[in-house]
Length: 589
Ligand code: PEP
Ligand code: MG
View (cartoon, rainbow, N blue to C red):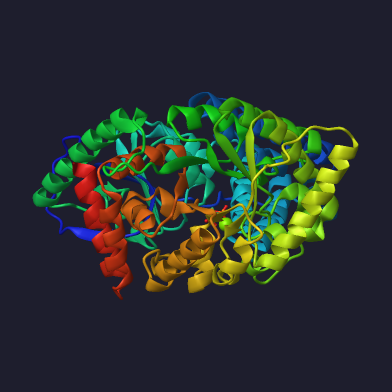
């Protein structure tokens, strides 16, 4: 912790949502995103052409600024993070927005910034009213770009976080992705915000920059006072205003322990994931693009347990062709062979609508219960078949497995498999090679699939439990709504019973069960899941070292006892505490 004199204001502990891990401590820098003041005046006839030219120029300058940010982000963080700004460039190219601004100018003849501001605000408020977090965030993109265009028209650059004079914790009502990307890692100690969720783009940037972050603090910006010192605990999602000496001492110790532990886990990560009683547990990686193969190998994962292929569709103007998909799947399969690569068919819809297919997704009141994943694919057969053919073709170049998302029961599985069989027939007729024995599984993430696991298992080569959705649907908790996030409980008895039921039915049918939701990557639950009988765990590559460490420091018999004890308990909090204590002991060993 940097040496900062604690001040004599009372300590206040504020819970939020953990968005990026790490602990930081320091003086605050309050950043309030506020709209720029736009003066309004009539433009004389002689200057009408020049006014439109001024608009064009501002769009051009803004485009260059965003491209510069993109280049910096790509250099510092990588291509994927830079892609976030594609959405910003698209706003600048939005012909409707530009034409409407010019029409407004022709109609009113007031200065172009006033016209643009009016039109952009209309767009932003339309997006903000959409009952869908992802689309609301697109409203944020438009707001961010509009403020840049206005700043360029008005001739000033506005407040930018990049200019933090010294080391500060940034306290903001909200921050945009470009604000976050513009932060200097050495001066921004942490980011805490009133609003936000784990899925917001700014948080994604913070996470990849390894800047600790807690979001969803509601009224923090109103609570802080000049001179306040803040401690940010990105592990537990807590911020502490004006921490006492005792708190600082405690956190100093926690921070040292976390660092030592992280290094220890990394050192042990080359060793096999074998329990002390000699049982090997398969640890695989979740990936979003083929280029992550290197990360899979770096973290010593046994291949890929979940390739979220819908990410091939995000941030591009046109849907990827069969050929492009094939190349992507083949790249991953070849890079990781003989390790398996589990390719999940498209899971579009829900919180993942995409621009290039927007016309296929009508507005729905409950997108998570709507036109999503396998339901969408079975209704869009040509698009589904393109993907299935691409996966089959890639199976000739490595160990490919296929699974469908959001399957609700055995009949739906059979329908999907029938389409797959059509693709096999077509490829065979065309003499295109593929692996005829490619394993085909079902994700178990809908309660009806879990409850009819015995029937579904007959149609499957394996199960992969998507706990993110399964828990959301079991408990009726929208997984992206920060207001009810605290009610989302992986250790609820209903969740445990459902997991156990799935495992029992799968094993009765002699098929394996993997868990690929976030629960699999939380070391608190490694022993519980294994104890419940889960065969494989799949998670984001950087989470693998902790899971492996826990596994190497337990006996399968102990994990089973833990699961049995948990199954006999009632309180989700008590079950969580039991699991956390067990994990803590093993991680310390
Ligand atoms: C899940 O639901 O747990 C899962 C792995 O799929 P996604 O998070 O992509 O919905
Ligand atoms: Mg899911």
